[in-house]
Image 1: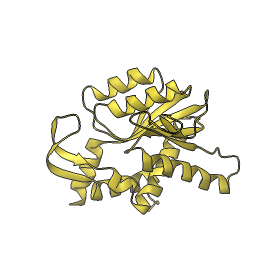
Image 2: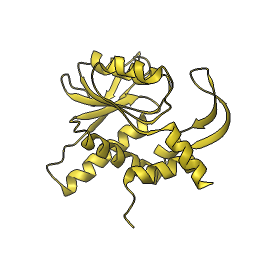
Image 3: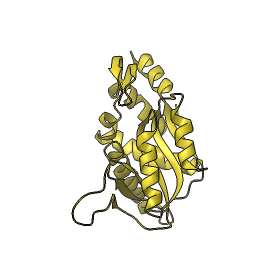
Image 4: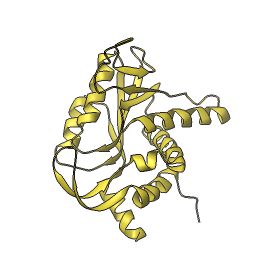
Length: 199
């Protein structure tokens, strides 16, 4: 029996520890009969490792070349760290593998020190991937896309771990991405199906 891929292992973990059935109010204000808290998985020791490698493999599968990965705090924080760490681990065994650095986008420009909105790696002209944990309306993803562009970076792709497939989410993100591909590791339907399968 073949070893499950990083993505397959991540899906199983997400379905087990991050997916809940019930009645929930989402950040958008709408209600849902399920909730996915990806941070339970992305901050899990094994879940974090799997997240980093699964996203790297997704980027490779779509031939996305980038020098950095970033997103809006707080959902993107563990994703960014895990992807950057996974790229460094890969470079140890394959020196030609690119390093992908990380940056975080503040929700508002800080009012002291450097007064910047982006923390971490930031260089005008570099190609970056914007990441998020769950995409519903896409507002936090779009916020990060706009901040990266304002800093002079080029958005090469947008990736979310779970896409809820809401009617207005993908079109809004794709419009903001302006031609850069919007990829997901999983749809909410896939996570739900795996959750039910595990019961």
